[in-house]
Image (cartoon, rainbow, N blue to C red; front, side, top):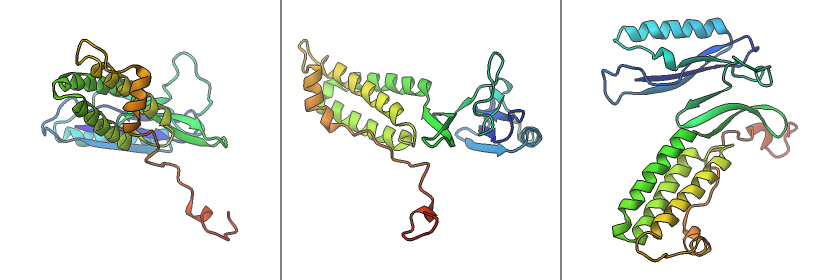
Length: 226
């Protein structure tokens, strides 16, 4: 399967193709190629799509047309008129929704947040897992949630996604609280008691991957460029 994304940073009239989903055919199970292709001009994006379509056809592969979009994405597209029929300003890629935004200094940035559908699916699976772990005791349930949240943080803890991570952590903790209290006919914790006793054992929300690091020339002591 091939998952491809393209973006542009030119005037609002420039557009790009966004093949954002896997191909309909997969003759080689387990094969997946994810990439983002960015173009300055619409003509280049169209040429890329045509060339990729032709190349994939040589291997009996094809892009799913219904899941391929043409959008504006870039600093010059930010703040351009929208309205009915306007192209979407976001796209999903690798479990994150990418969108256009501005930094605190007003500069253009690519924002990222946890994909809502992916998060809901993960929470549903987490709930089912905790339900199955009740027979093994509260310690096993807590240990599993700690590992689960640690892994989630390592993947989704990117710049600009602190709120998305915090929301997921809160809902995951709520599921743990729910299933801990369903191990018997009597409640094991109140919410306040749970937060005091168990909440401190869970990972803390933080940004693991800084996608906007300080340029090296601004970190040198005595530099005239600081």
